[in-house]
Length: 311
Image (cartoon, rainbow, N blue to C red; front, side, top):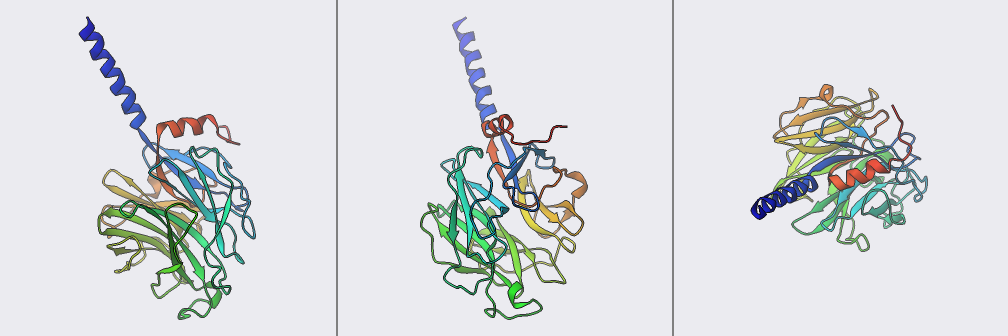
């Protein structure tokens, strides 16, 4: 009898452990006109997304005090780090806050990234990436610095390049350095690690005739990136983010020209299949980032959904 109870106890513990280990996808998002704050959605399969409502955090920093392009990464200690575009123009920094549960957030900070060059027009679309090999965070963003790069077909105040800093604690930061100069205006970069010494950059070609999404490759998360692809999305698409689902990488993007959301799947970042008809997202969803969380985080979010529209 005692042996039977012991087996049942072990089975119960195993079931509890399995439940705790289950992970969900979370999609950070915002709503136009981007003055409300952070919204969230979640998914079990990476294809179909459920609205978690919002705002979970309202913008308080920056010149225009907006909250666009929300990028969230969970660190190895369980802390969620959140950066966002805090202004359209006239701002040398980005917004930052942290949380343990995506509900209760720290005081917002304004991290200055381009104040060393006061000719900088903007700081857009910061993207977080945790480098698990160097145990540090990389922040990548797009800025226009007039007359710094070959003008090409873009106006001097719209000729973006990608920059980056690194940090271990979001208190001290490395010197700002150039991250990507592909020879044309580029924004909205997201880093994907496939393996050691194998990284993919998914980004937007922001030149007027293109305004679509491409990829490039490197053996380091900070580049140099090479072999820039042709576009695999149509005109007026932006804000890519990537979710690994099984052996597929799903690249979600904001198809703002058509006022809808789209996605493609790929296994190698060389061939892409349009799967827009296979995904579903909440109404009004705008581009952000996808990350994974444990079930307890989802349970807490479901119990604390702010202003969720009831069906």
